[in-house]
Amino acid sequence: MQWAEKTAGIMQMEGAYLQIQASKPQSLAYGLMDSPVGTCAWIIEKFHGWADNLQADGRSDIEHSFTKHQLLSNVMIYLMTGSFATSVWFYRGYFEEMPAIGEGEKVEVPVGIGNFAEPYISFPPRRMVEHSYNVVHWSDFETAGHFAAMEDAPQFVAEVQRFLSEL
Image 1: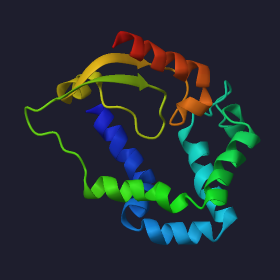
Image 2: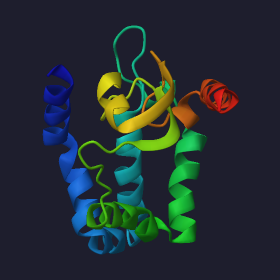
Image 3: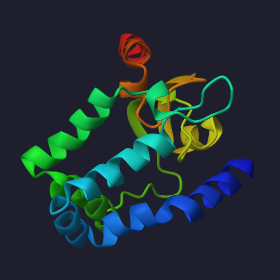
Image 4: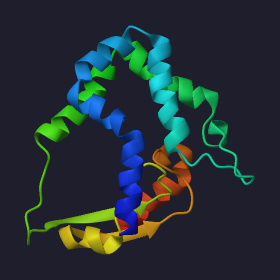
Protein backbone atom coordinates (compact mmCIF):
# COMPACT_ATOMS: atom_id res chain seq x y z
CA MET A 1 0.00 0.00 0.00
CA GLN A 2 1.49 3.31 -1.13
CA TRP A 3 0.29 5.36 1.87
CA ALA A 4 1.74 2.88 4.39
CA GLU A 5 5.10 2.76 2.60
CA LYS A 6 5.30 6.54 2.42
CA THR A 7 4.34 6.87 6.10
CA ALA A 8 6.93 4.27 7.14
CA GLY A 9 9.63 6.18 5.25
CA ILE A 10 8.66 9.46 6.86
CA MET A 11 8.63 7.89 10.31
CA GLN A 12 12.11 6.51 9.66
CA MET A 13 13.32 10.07 9.04
CA GLU A 14 11.13 11.96 11.53
CA GLY A 15 10.18 9.37 14.16
CA ALA A 16 12.88 10.34 16.67
CA TYR A 17 10.99 13.59 17.30
CA LEU A 18 7.90 11.65 18.32
CA GLN A 19 9.85 9.06 20.31
CA ILE A 20 11.82 11.54 22.42
CA GLN A 21 8.68 13.50 23.25
CA ALA A 22 6.81 10.32 24.14
CA SER A 23 9.59 8.61 26.10
CA LYS A 24 11.63 11.41 27.73
CA PRO A 25 9.44 14.53 27.74
CA GLN A 26 10.81 15.89 31.00
CA SER A 27 14.46 15.59 29.94
CA LEU A 28 13.68 17.30 26.66
CA ALA A 29 11.75 20.04 28.46
CA TYR A 30 14.56 20.81 30.91
CA GLY A 31 17.10 20.99 28.12
CA LEU A 32 15.02 23.20 25.88
CA MET A 33 13.65 25.51 28.55
CA ASP A 34 17.24 26.15 29.66
CA SER A 35 18.17 27.16 26.13
CA PRO A 36 16.07 29.70 24.22
CA VAL A 37 18.13 28.94 21.10
CA GLY A 38 17.45 25.21 21.56
CA THR A 39 13.73 25.84 21.97
CA CYS A 40 13.70 28.02 18.87
CA ALA A 41 15.59 25.42 16.83
CA TRP A 42 13.31 22.58 17.98
CA ILE A 43 10.14 24.45 17.04
CA ILE A 44 11.23 26.30 13.90
CA GLU A 45 12.71 23.15 12.37
CA LYS A 46 9.21 21.62 12.44
CA PHE A 47 7.65 24.70 10.86
CA HIS A 48 10.27 24.42 8.12
CA GLY A 49 9.82 20.69 7.55
CA TRP A 50 6.11 20.17 8.07
CA ALA A 51 4.55 23.23 6.47
CA ASP A 52 3.67 23.68 2.82
CA ASN A 53 6.74 25.85 2.19
CA LEU A 54 7.32 24.98 -1.45
CA GLN A 55 7.49 27.88 -3.84
CA ALA A 56 6.52 27.74 -7.51
CA ASP A 57 10.15 27.15 -8.46
CA GLY A 58 10.34 24.08 -6.18
CA ARG A 59 12.49 25.69 -3.48
CA SER A 60 11.47 25.45 0.17
CA ASP A 61 11.14 28.79 1.95
CA ILE A 62 9.67 28.99 5.44
CA GLU A 63 8.74 32.63 4.85
CA HIS A 64 6.45 31.49 2.04
CA SER A 65 4.08 30.29 4.77
CA PHE A 66 4.94 32.29 7.90
CA THR A 67 6.21 35.70 8.88
CA LYS A 68 9.15 36.00 11.26
CA HIS A 69 6.71 37.58 13.70
CA GLN A 70 4.45 34.50 13.62
CA LEU A 71 7.36 32.12 14.12
CA LEU A 72 8.99 34.06 16.94
CA SER A 73 5.63 34.67 18.65
CA ASN A 74 5.03 30.92 18.66
CA VAL A 75 8.46 30.25 20.20
CA MET A 76 8.05 33.05 22.75
CA ILE A 77 4.76 31.62 24.00
CA TYR A 78 6.63 28.51 25.13
CA LEU A 79 9.58 30.45 26.57
CA MET A 80 7.65 33.15 28.41
CA THR A 81 5.03 30.83 29.89
CA GLY A 82 7.42 27.95 30.61
CA SER A 83 4.92 25.65 28.92
CA PHE A 84 7.21 23.51 26.78
CA ALA A 85 7.08 20.67 29.33
CA THR A 86 3.30 20.53 29.41
CA SER A 87 3.15 20.67 25.62
CA VAL A 88 5.27 17.54 25.18
CA TRP A 89 3.62 15.53 27.94
CA PHE A 90 0.68 15.07 25.57
CA TYR A 91 2.80 12.63 23.56
CA ARG A 92 3.70 10.60 26.65
CA GLY A 93 0.06 10.48 27.70
CA TYR A 94 -1.05 9.45 24.24
CA PHE A 95 1.28 6.46 24.19
CA GLU A 96 0.37 5.45 27.74
CA GLU A 97 -3.36 5.67 27.07
CA MET A 98 -3.41 5.20 23.30
CA PRO A 99 -7.00 4.78 22.23
CA ALA A 100 -7.68 1.64 20.28
CA ILE A 101 -10.69 0.87 18.15
CA GLY A 102 -11.48 -2.82 18.31
CA GLU A 103 -12.26 -4.99 15.32
CA GLY A 104 -15.82 -4.32 14.21
CA GLU A 105 -16.08 -1.16 16.35
CA LYS A 106 -16.60 2.30 14.94
CA VAL A 107 -16.50 5.77 16.46
CA GLU A 108 -19.98 7.11 15.78
CA VAL A 109 -19.32 10.76 16.67
CA PRO A 110 -19.47 12.76 13.40
CA VAL A 111 -15.96 13.39 12.07
CA GLY A 112 -14.80 16.04 9.63
CA ILE A 113 -11.48 15.73 7.82
CA GLY A 114 -9.56 18.57 6.24
CA ASN A 115 -6.89 16.61 4.40
CA PHE A 116 -4.32 19.35 3.90
CA ALA A 117 -1.04 19.00 2.00
CA GLU A 118 0.63 17.46 5.03
CA PRO A 119 4.28 16.67 4.27
CA TYR A 120 4.79 14.93 7.64
CA ILE A 121 2.13 12.29 8.17
CA SER A 122 -0.95 12.45 6.02
CA PHE A 123 -4.30 10.90 6.65
CA PRO A 124 -4.71 7.31 5.49
CA PRO A 125 -6.87 6.79 2.42
CA ARG A 126 -10.46 7.81 3.06
CA ARG A 127 -11.81 4.23 2.91
CA MET A 128 -9.46 3.26 5.77
CA VAL A 129 -10.61 6.17 7.93
CA GLU A 130 -14.28 5.50 7.18
CA HIS A 131 -13.83 1.90 8.33
CA SER A 132 -13.39 3.11 11.93
CA TYR A 133 -14.90 6.60 12.00
CA ASN A 134 -18.21 8.19 11.07
CA VAL A 135 -16.80 10.56 8.45
CA VAL A 136 -19.53 13.02 7.50
CA HIS A 137 -17.23 15.56 5.85
CA TRP A 138 -13.97 15.14 3.90
CA SER A 139 -12.10 17.74 1.88
CA ASP A 140 -8.73 17.36 0.16
CA PHE A 141 -6.50 20.41 -0.15
CA GLU A 142 -3.53 21.13 -2.39
CA THR A 143 -2.09 23.71 -0.01
CA ALA A 144 -1.37 24.27 3.69
CA GLY A 145 0.43 21.61 5.67
CA HIS A 146 0.73 20.47 9.28
CA PHE A 147 0.07 23.99 10.55
CA ALA A 148 -2.89 24.67 8.25
CA ALA A 149 -4.58 27.08 10.67
CA MET A 150 -1.51 29.34 10.58
CA GLU A 151 -0.54 28.71 6.97
CA ASP A 152 -3.92 29.60 5.46
CA ALA A 153 -6.26 30.77 8.21
CA PRO A 154 -9.14 31.81 5.91
CA GLN A 155 -9.15 28.42 4.16
CA PHE A 156 -8.96 26.59 7.51
CA VAL A 157 -11.81 28.60 9.07
CA ALA A 158 -14.00 28.16 5.99
CA GLU A 159 -13.43 24.40 6.13
CA VAL A 160 -14.36 24.20 9.82
CA GLN A 161 -17.48 26.25 9.10
CA ARG A 162 -18.45 23.93 6.21
CA PHE A 163 -18.09 20.92 8.49
CA LEU A 164 -20.14 22.49 11.25
CA SER A 165 -22.87 23.52 8.84
CA GLU A 166 -23.22 19.86 7.81
CA LEU A 167 -23.86 18.69 11.37
